[in-house]
Length: 97
Image 1 (tube, rainbow, N blue to C red):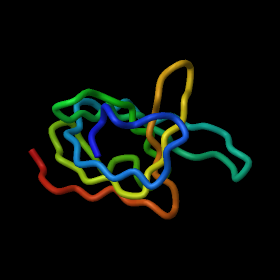
Image 2: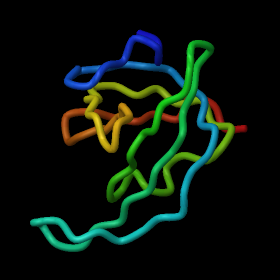
Image 3: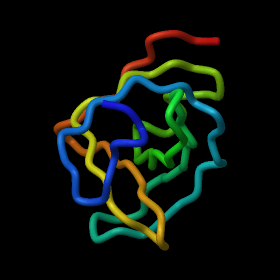
Image 4: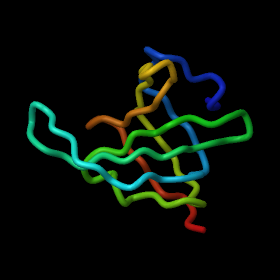
């Protein structure tokens, strides 16, 4: 699958992408307590998309890394499609820059 094919509501998405940028982590309050969250912009030759990084995923990726995302789901947030990787998914670093 390619970034251009991702649409809100899709599940079990697998992509290989390059990390373009990563935001500073911030704390958010969820029903499970306070957790760290960051946003990464990831891209392939077809486009860019935001990948939300939660808890242990924060700090896993850095700009320039090539990563494989498996088991992700897409949601619409503030008019744009974003990727999230839940408990059943994974982010694997294939190549560090």
